[in-house]
Length: 392
Image 1: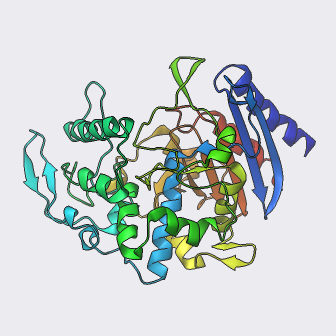
Image 2: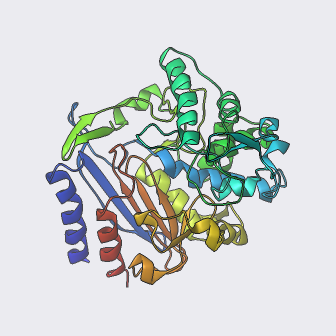
């Protein structure tokens, strides 16, 4: 095990030493027991704050698996059905339009379902603002630019208010036609508010965060914890990092937060998120308490995409993976080039955070950084390979 520790340490330390990240941390748990943890570098280099175990980070898209669990809990309680049209909860989505290749709009022939949102087959895009971007993405970016302007001027839109604006944008395609990464999880948060009669963050706290002992997870950082909040960093040039805490997708981490973004808004610590991931690795149970039924966890971590839908799931980092309920699902070891077993699942985040959940071996691997636009970084494959060489 010493060689395992040394190799993992070397991989993490090298990322900091070469200037790729300011700081990082990794945690590996097997059968509920920690087999590796360490951290290197800074949580906030400008303040000289080191990365620590209780450092609070921005999850960005690793918020999405939490939202999927929330939907699964609501379905188990009879509050929602994944085959329901989302318009049952959010009437603004009843009469959507689909953008055509020439930019014209046609009424959608199908309703967006909760399942479409869970599998990213809804046709609801993220905003796009790069040369050659899609017209539907460009239009969504206009909506977000206007909302971000309001946010910076002190406006605090609620979750429902933001989603109503998102619903004014046309769909990229007919619901169910293909996989397309976008704002689906954010829409789910608003639907859950209607279904549960609670603010989304309150539902998560009651049903997930409190039972899983996640005291540092939520949609804002309390004032007394702000000194533990990591800075995020842009990389305008390779290996040159610049501190940046500007809002990207309407995320906002102060106590007067209005929009609780189901796709990107949570903050957490590595131990908090480990509790969440351990629950899923253990079939829905954490410390003897059942959070989800085992059949529900299997449903969430099953590839639900058809071959036609999965054609657009073409990211290099998802090679060999299908898509379940807001999580990637390992379905082909040859394509992934990985010894990780089939059925392993998880996701990453815009600032480079990564989780792998392996219910076969009851293993959880977490890697945390705060580099904007990073997604899944190459070192993750090495961390996983070294771990699976040693879990026996």
